[in-house]
Image (cartoon, rainbow, N blue to C red):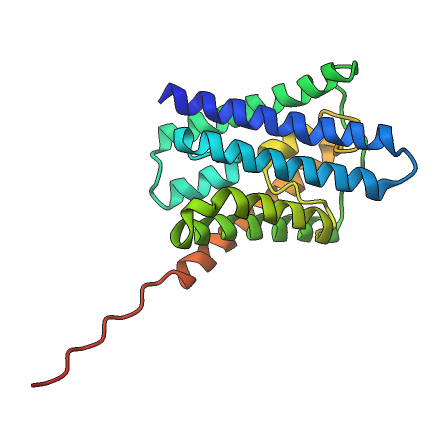
Length: 224
């Protein structure tokens, strides 16, 4: 089980290093063009997700996200102890990943976020982002489990562009991004509402998946 916890922490750390590091690099290479910075951020994050889910999925399931872990716990795929350990590993890994990105670009390791992300549009965006991600995972596991890395990466890449919040869709990511003043950051005071919206999106995705995945009724046998 320790291998699974390590995989969750390591995977989440590398994911956050990618999210924050690619944002820093994107802005450095194109300081006057936010579209280029966002494209770099989205492409790097999607690419990292594909690789991390592929290589770490067989060890831990590659959640890297407390919302995913919560969904798996509520579905009975994990026991409470394992789920709690996953969430702790994810949060610790996320924080380590932000610090790693800062260190690679010679920035202060911890810096409270200053980027305002608040308001009903942003909260709705986070609910939609998380709903879509969880529904992708829950339906994908049933229909095309082998395609989960590509499905998750593809959804997140798209969500960067069609969702106003740029799709955090992850409570651990949100907490960690509240500790960076870079392109990827969020103010700490805005983080709780984001997390609440993410949890609501998770609950709605579970309800939708439960409805969509109800097995078809077995037809009654023909009378003799």
